[in-house]
Amino acid sequence: MKLIHELALGNLQPMARNFKKDTVYAKLLSEVAERQDKLIATLSPEQKELFDLANEATIDLSVESDCDLFVKGFVLGAQLMMEILTADPTEDVVR
Image 1: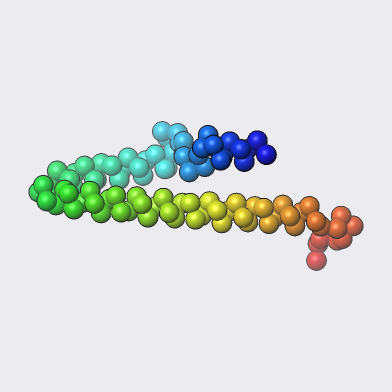
Image 2 (image 1 turned 180 degrees about the vertical axis):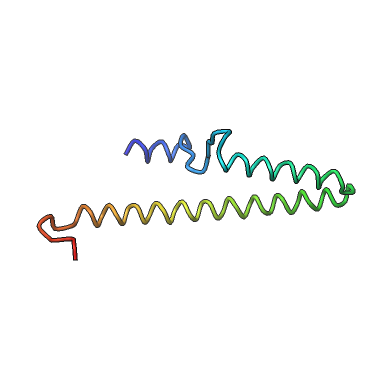
């Protein structure tokens, strides 16, 4: 119950992600940032504003998707635990 309490208080952030500098994720993130910087440098002020709005919408969509995937994964994990906890230990699980 402590984890649920901490989650409710906002002390746990399941969507926060830490990563090491030498990972594939870090490399891809760096490439995205570099390419965005190059693209933004070529845009007019109006185009930059439109790009920012499109980027904000993409971030909002990503947050919604991440939350949905977290909930689905949490539910699946709970279902797996229920199946394990309610399984007949004498039943042969190999079929």
